[in-house]
Image 1 (tube, one colour):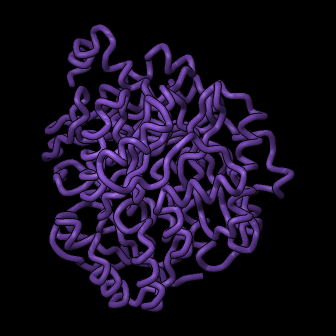
Image 2 (image 1 turned 135 degrees about the horizontal axis):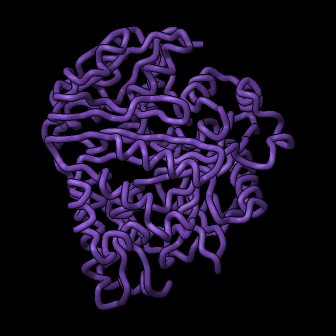
Image 3 (image 1 turned 45 degrees about the vertical axis):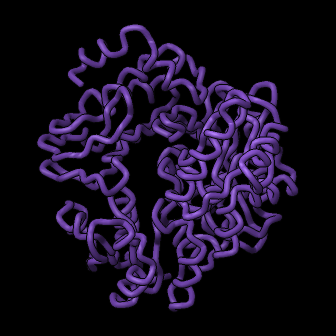
Length: 469
């Protein structure tokens, strides 16, 4: 096992990784920007190295600086967290060439999964169903529009080189297609450095269900059940849970097994999340593979007892999936049990306007998250007095709760959010509190349009005001 691991990331994921490294007896080497030097978690690391100014391009996305800093601190491995360089095949190759172990999949899998078109083609060949789609759109605007229109409307224009909701433009008719293509290509270029896009048939209000896979590159690939990530704003996840309520356990188990089987046949060699859209008429349709630790990983940890960050490090050190999982009490593939144990929820707390969901940077004049306790943990990189800058993602905390069933988990989340005190900037806490009491959500009627349904409901703004938004 490693003695020193560099963390090339910030905020909640840095806190998460520092904690696991400490528990494993491994020194944490934190690489951070000037903007983050005063944040409270920085002092928790064993060693700290400055990457550069606040701008991500000059710090967390500067590959040469990141690798040089890791080498300076004599790291053996580098963990990219999520976002930033976590899915960058070129960075993984550079890290390996510099003598570092990249805590993630082999660069070839990052390249394969980084292109959504090739990933869909690969996984379809391995037996996973996909929604009707085009290949990468090429030619003139008219030619692209004609090709995209062949799959029918409504459709979604998507970037080939990345996800997270960036550059995803829904189109409900041919008259809007040319403009949508231009917008999507522009956003894709800014977000991923490539304007390449493709079109996919748009399911109206599907569920977003994903399956956590642990694979070791030796043909061993196991699943750790599913997460439902249907509650989204601007096509980005905001509230996740494990397991997926209201869906037949037999169907979920079958899809989880098929996802793990496909990753095994692929020879995949790390954590991977097989993301799907579920529609009652179409069933599960493959969406993408996220080849890294997910923001929502903690809900899987709560219902399985598996530390996914530790699992990543052990996979990177060459251990087998079965051996790792057996250490967490997960038996052979045939003896995993009937499903997740209990239920877990995660709410992402953002510094943002809870009506338009736009970032709201500023100083945290008051910042008092609920205290960790049985069935409750909070991941945050901030403290009272910290500055939430406009340079990075505005997520300021993750609130994770668990209980014996979904109703008890919702109750626990409601209490935790009610205890969350923030002043100095706007947050989405009031939105999350209202969601906990929103009839369709409580009833398990989840779909990707649920957040818009709540925001558009009668009296929404008045109820926010009553919560002192």
